[in-house]
Length: 269
Image (cartoon, rainbow, N blue to C red; front, side, top):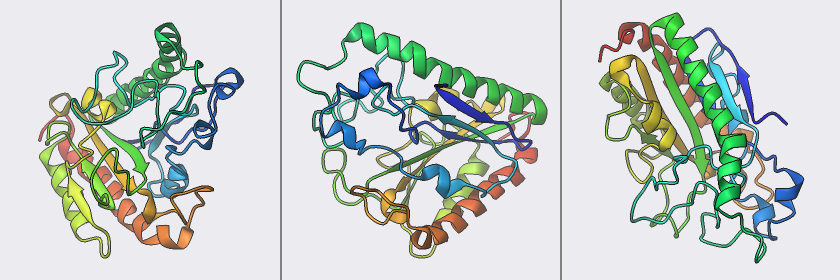
């Protein structure tokens, strides 16, 4: 199994999918408990949601599940949200705080390092290579990090998550013009709620690669799964009718990012 799939495009926008993969090596799958094998925290059908919205965009997609190792966590193990409930580089629990490994089968520190080497590192090597290729071609690269999550997870956040969660780490990871465009489009999305830099302000990928002064702009889009799934419980089926209005919003946003890129080439804000 290759840990990452890359589809090279000719536009300045790169779509990254760190959490749509469902592959687990047999030896790892066998150690998950019944809850873990549900793979509840997958970004279900997110690649289908974005399919065809921006023809010509590059795509970098992890094939392994986040329970193998989380491709959107700091490889050092440092928490993204100090003081708040979250999951680790190699998760011990799901988002609800429920154990996912059979008792006594939890991965130890050495195994976590090996998984990081085998899966996390190749994914980010491919992503970094694509960013550099796109920046060399266009003078700018816009990394759009694609995520989704269940809309209600009391262990992680209070209440119900907004439908559209824009993450720019307080405006540090991309040009103001891109942040302004994203916020404007989200605010005009009829029937869909939104927030900028709320509970999900940008994960490790966004914060690590976002260097607008160097021509690399990074943006995280976290979507509530209620916007495009029949149900946020198994079997997590895709709902094309429910997803259609959201797809229109996402297409508008992605095309706007691509159109703005030439005006920002070279790192200008």
